[in-house]
Image (cartoon, rainbow, N blue to C red; front, top):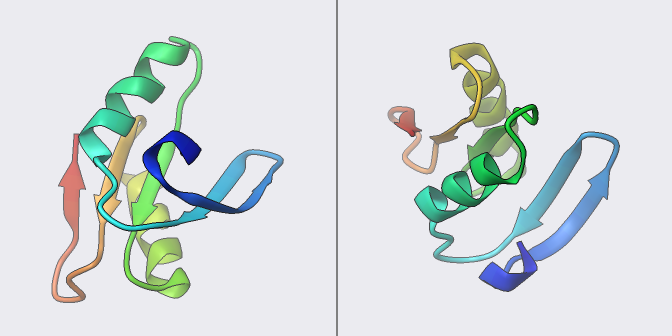
Length: 80
């Protein structure tokens, strides 16, 4: 995350919260998938913490190893 100019706000247990601009989500997904085949993850993206959490919950319900962008509050965008 730091290599992608993200500021780490929280890191602990099984979660990371970061803040930044213009993150390349597809590259992050590819990097995370290549770390470990047994590791699963979900990513929620938005403009505020509340919507990030909503996006994260949606990503978790959608399946493993994907991201959901909820920056446009009109709809969710699934990124695979």
